[in-house]
Structure formats: C-alpha cells, structure tokens
Image (tube, rainbow, N blue to C red; front, side, top):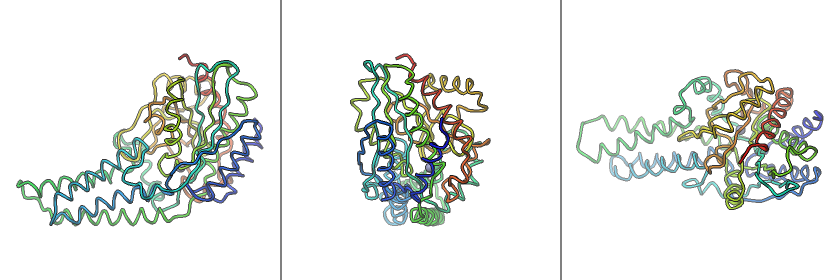
Length: 398
Ligand SMILES: [Zn+2]
C-alpha cells in the first residue's frame, strides 16, 4: 500500500476541522469522499437522509420525558409510570435497532451517505458491504468520565456493558415508585427517593446538554482512519479482486456518532436488494487507536448486546492468526459501531477496530484525536488485516 496516500486521506479529512454529524462540515466531507471514489474510477452516489446532530440531544429527550413524569409522582403517579415506560422503551428500541422514536424532534437534520458499487465481472454470487463512517462526535465532560469508567466497563459482564445502563436503572426505579404509589403496599420513603431521582435526572440533563453543545472533534483515528482504510481496500479490490463473482459495495455513512442513523438508513433503503443476494458487512472503525482487533459482539448504548455470526467470527480469527496478530479477538467494547445497525437488521458481518491492550482508546472523542497523535503503523496493520478478512468473506460459501 502507498502509505502516503493513506496518510493524505486521513489528513484531508482532518483538515475539515470537524465532521460533526449532519453539520455543514460533514456535508463538505461527503463531497470530498465522492471525489475520492470518482478518482478510483467508481461512480459515487450521495444520498441524503434525516439524521441527528448529536447523540446527547437524543438521549436528553428521553431523560426529559422521564423527568417530567417523575415530577408528577406526588399528584399523578399513573403519568409518572407512563412517562418512564415510554422513555425506557423508546431509549432501548432506538439504541438497539438504530431507529428513531421519541427523539424525532432532534432527528430532522439532513445528512449524507456516500456509497458506490463495484460490480463483479460475472453474475454476482454474494455481496460485501465495506463500511466506515466519516462523521465525528461532539466533545464533552462525558468523555472524561468515560475514560475513567472504561476500564471498569471493559471488565464488566456483557449485560452490564451498555454505557447508558444507569439511565435505564433510573427509569426502572421510577416505574417502581409510580407503581408503589398507585397500589397500596409496603410503605417506602417515596418522597426522598423521588427527590433523589429528580436530582439524578437534573445531573444527567446538565451532562447531556454540555455534551450536545460541545464542538465536534477532529476525528483522525475515529474515523478518518477507517474511511482511508475502506478507500484503500476498494483500490486494492479494483486492482486485484479476490474473485469474479462478488459485488463490493463501498459505504461511507454519516451520523454514526449520533446513533448509527446513516448505516441504518442505507440498509433500510436497500432492504429488497439485500434480500436478493447473500450479503456480509465489513465495518472499519477507528483503526488508528491501536493494534487491529475485531468485535464478536456489538453493545448498544442501552439494551441487549447482539452477537456476530459464529462463522464470520471464526473466519476473522483465522485471518488474525494468519496476520500474526496478538489478542485480536473476538472482543467486546462498551459501546456500538455501525455494525450494530447491520446486525440489528440481520445482515451478518464483522467490525474491525483498533485499540491498545486493556481496551484503551487514546484520545477517544477528544480534540487530541488528531493525525499527529494517531498510530499510523497500527492503522496500516488494520488495513492489511481488513483486507485478509475481506478476501475470506468474498470466498465464503453461500
Ligand atoms: Zn466515535
């Protein structure tokens, strides 16, 4: 691979300053990426969809609805229960299925998916969906807290990994308090508990508002590195396709950082095409943070984790052995990637990430996520590993 080309693309994406989800910067980056695909000789499509500018705003809507309900516990406990159940169900469904329910008022911003199809010479027998999001996350105090909680989350059992588990817990407590108030039963100190609940919601709201208002980060490792990797793989595929009967889709979605909305929009829009040909996704996210690894399970922000297909996990493990990688996976990170949007839609596949030992993502979602701080050697190893996995996916039997 031409290392200067890879670095050039990472730096070009970084040069937009940020690529905040559904922002004008994100739109400009989409145009640049379409140009890069055109230079490879494939015709890109830029397709818009309604996205969100921030995950924080989407989470805040849920907390707000629950908090309004909690404030009514003394007078209208039924409303308290309804608000908490509504917020909880919507939060979990939105975050596990990558859809929009209660947060629709803050999901009305135009964003873009950039994608292209590289058809095979013969009739297609299968399809590979090669994916990397190009938008960037908002900065916020939440990421400083995350840095300290990450080691704990990494060691937690799978069901305790979703980062918004405390919010799920608060809403569950609220439902319980409302029910206790509705039915005569054991006398619990409902008033102090409800005040504590309201205070917790206020603290969460402050955290989410500060995060929503934070400037988006430059995102060199997360995820200019993944985008450059995908373009590099597309280039290699065009030069030397692993087989002549596999279609390659290159998909660069927006709005991953605000809840995988770009990948979900693409998959929903192409549901019929996806049903006609066996498809596997290969998602590349943040390979510039450290040595390449792969995710065996995608963990939503709230809700139940989804496991990847066992056959594809096996094939990825085999590729890792062939590449001589140490501790490549299957791993589980306490948070999702675009892979979740595909797995939730029953599209099998795998996500390749990069992190240091112990699940450390240096400069994750901070202004220090620049090309100067990026691990280019690790990113290059990530590209080579992804190519190996891609070839194995192409040669997989239907
Ligand atoms: Zn990110």
